[in-house]
Length: 135
Image (cartoon, rainbow, N blue to C red; front, side, top):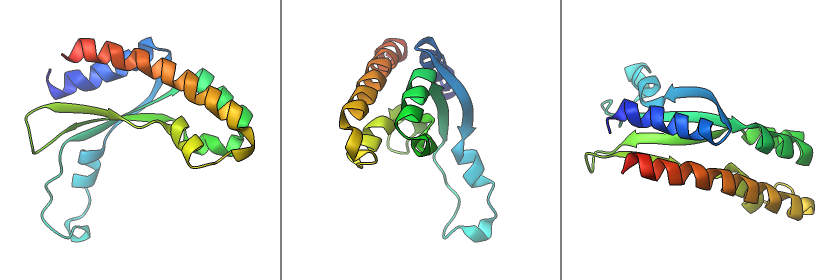
């Protein structure tokens, strides 16, 4: 698939799993617009877009745990090109696993594990569908 089509597919598959698209930000374009004096070298940024989404169930559970944790929301999936190959890559890191692994709510381990489980189930659907669409 072409780059723009991958971005659209990532957004659609998240939405089909119940996520709401909050924003789509082309990070590479943002970086390239910075004044040249802020760079240490020539501007050569690989094309990168963040698809930023949020799921109401995940947001509600996060709010219930600790409203301060919502500063880690929403979730983002990166779509990028690499200088090493001619493919478009899609990558996601779990915010809920980060909440757990960084120990942000040590006194609520069971609830954190439930949050990780719910997020994992939703993202499994997204990834399964993305793999089918992008192969």
